[in-house]
Length: 370
Image (cartoon, rainbow, N blue to C red; front, side, top):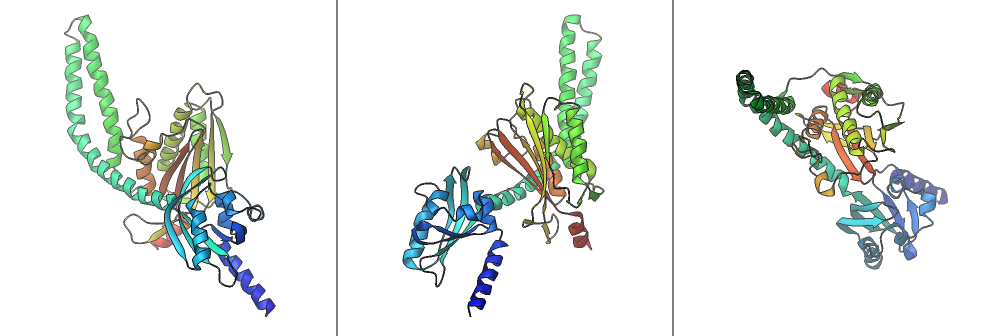
């Protein structure tokens, strides 16, 4: 009988450890009796360390999670709360979670506490918004290309004709007209990229080759004053994509990181990362199939960060933090990543801004198409 109970306990522990959501078992006086692998990642501490703590040590003083656990212990019934804010030095700021608490039968006041971080779900929802914005800007790009570029070429030609017949003092004005017409054409051409709906050639792409190419381009130009750090998972399989488009996306993000750091920074650093992170799935564009997105590419910089009021709209067209920016670079990134069946997200605090791209593996896409 004891061996059966031990086997059952082992199975329960193994089951809890494979869950992607943090799970804690809280006992008397709010002590932590058990923490699964996801809880170790969430609280940035090993299970051994967590079991020496109480729940008060893990969450902020007066957190509603404390009263939630007390209510479950008192009533002996399950309780759920949504969009609770957790915050403590260990968690590194506010994190919004859904909390599910249930009594553990046969174990006195023990409570099973499961957390589901809301930011992941909200980021996935924002990807759908980004795709909708990309579709809107696609139509806008096609319209601008036809309705603006042609008249601008006429305006520029007329200004060049006038330049030969006006006094020298007025030639500055005709040159200004030409320069501004050229600037508007460049802006329209960037928007026009959104209107290109032709299917691109796809195949297996080694993301590390793409990152190395982007790093060489950056170090030979706009980021020659910045130190690059690489944290790669060398065992990653290839992604299904278009190499040129992925170079464009990553070069855009690296350039944004370099501009955020600034040309005068003496300690500027950009960290390029890759990792395999299973557990995230998203509906593929134009299909009912749900595609796994286990391959993660990260670009982190130690610049001043993105203002909090812009973070939720960072990938929307014409939203920018730069005085001379057009606000189309990140919108184009969102479109290209979305066309690849992936998602892009940003987390930003001062001295630590990270853009993460999650993409499907080449094998997964081939099986779906088959």
